[in-house]
Image 1 (spheres, rainbow, N blue to C red):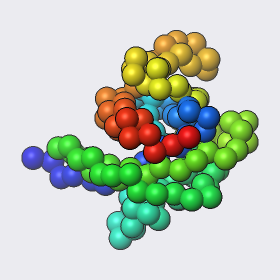
Image 2 (tube, rainbow, N blue to C red; image 1 turned 45 degrees about the vertical axis):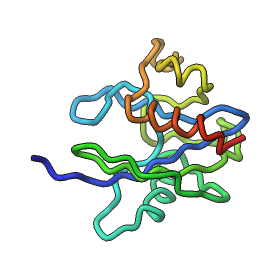
Image 3 (spheres, one colour; image 1 turned 180 degrees about the horizontal axis):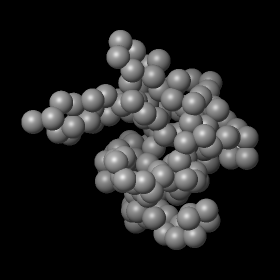
Length: 144
């Protein structure tokens, strides 16, 4: 049995849309070529609350004005600490340092489980856990 590792990921929202990252399409990463939430590994000794702020800064040069814990999702290999925050800047103010593309997805696209990427010039699927987390979040209507 493999050991679980922890990640901190963020649901970032604005105007009833959700910011997602199109993950690089390379072997060896979870959900290559899939849409997912921004975030990443929690460093040894690091708190999830600290990790999410660091990861958002590293991946898109964004620090949310406020960030709240949404929940924790566990499977056999990953413990996902999920946060949510408003996206208070336009997309062109974000700098994509990690990933293939980024985009604002509608609840309909999330439910459908796929979205077109201009950079990939293809429709790409959502990562299964990311889709489930977002659908749970949308159902609770914790955003605007």
